[in-house]
Image (cartoon, rainbow, N blue to C red; front, side):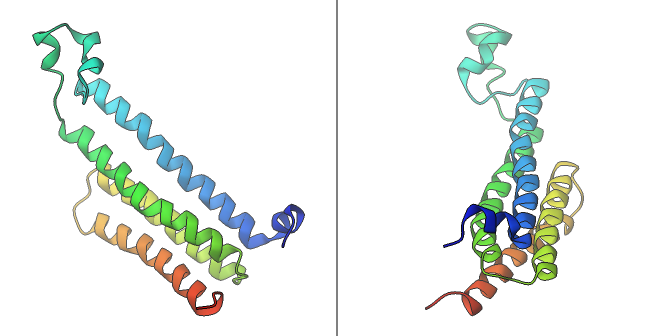
Length: 155
């Protein structure tokens, strides 16, 4: 079993940790983005959130959906669906001894695709921009999973 010093000397693992920190930070920023859109559009999901804008029936007009808020929420949900598998598979992949340049290609493609996906979702850019970004990121995760199953696991 590797100790922490060996792990910190593993260039692939350190690259994975760096790119994971970037993409998890991006995903975390989606929560304040959703809150910003909710506040600026005065579109809330819960009755207690509306109370600062009025009482009773007057507050109920703020209990609604808004296209911009929903777009940010969907982008955030898509992040959750894609970043969580990347983190799990990427961790195992980074510890399986891949070539640094190949691992960096995987990590950079994934992070770039997810950032572009968010930009394409929120701007919104016409399709197939968002779909291509999704499939690049998804393909990267599948590629790492395939390499793990092919070389590193005992099935």
